[in-house]
Image (cartoon, one colour):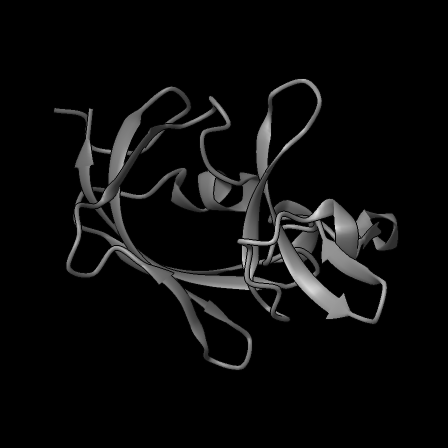
Length: 143
């Protein structure tokens, strides 16, 4: 078994992710740890960089600036769509996240940011875009 996390190591990590105000946005607590290969961009850059050099069962807390997480919020990803383009069976409420297909068949999430009489504003940014992230990490397996 490998003793230290290096590039191309397959690692399993228990984690708790928080925003700077302490809000927990994700955790592996009560679930399986996240498993990924370092250097293959399966997780955000700051998370990959954070586990490099860690030893088995080592714990640490890392801070990831938004540029190494989900990037800044992009105003052009706020899109107004006419209300009549939405099927009547979709509940139109601010904050709801919809799964949308583009013309090429790719599926992505969009949150309803605003609703007015004739249109709906969709936010296509990742929910964590524009936010610095903190993670408490524990490496539980290295291969």
